[in-house]
Image (cartoon, rainbow, N blue to C red; front, side, top):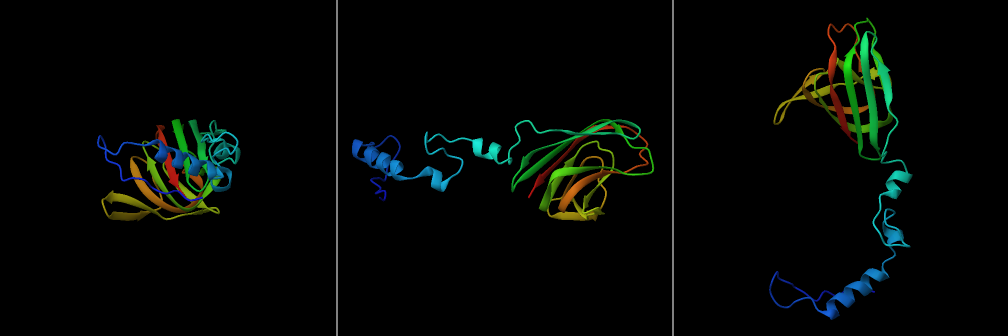
Length: 185
C-alpha cells in the first residue's frame, strides 16, 4: 500500500484535516512493519524505544568507570557512555598529578576508528595513542586554523585520528582538576 497525499495544508487555513486524510494516513502507518525498518521501534507496541541501543551496548546508561590513581596524587576517572559508531568519552581529573618519569595510561573501552575531537580544561599533559604509538593531533587556533602537536594539557580543542588510549605524561609539577571530553567516530 502506498500513501496518497491529500494536502497541501496551511496553518490556520482551509482545508482542515479531514477524516479521509487521517484514515488514509493511519492505514498507511499500520501497513508498515516497523521492526523490519527500524530496530529501535517495537513491532508489538509501536512505541519508539532506546532499548535496542542499550541492549546492543551502544548506549551505556551507567557505564563502568575506569579509575586511574595518579602516581603522585589524585585520580583520573574515564567513562564511555556512547560506544556505537558515534563514541563519547569523558575523563574527570581530581587533584591528578603524575610527577614520575613514566606515563600512566587508560585504554578506551571502545576505540575511535576514524576521528576524535578533544576538548580539555585543566588537565595533566597527555598524548593519545593508537596501538601504543602517539598520534599526531591538530589543535584549533581559530576558525580554519590548525597546528600540529602530540601533547595536550590546559584549555585546548584538538582533532585526533583513530586512537585507543589516553596517556598522561610524567614529570608534572602541579595537580590538575578538570575535564577531558573526546567524541567522534
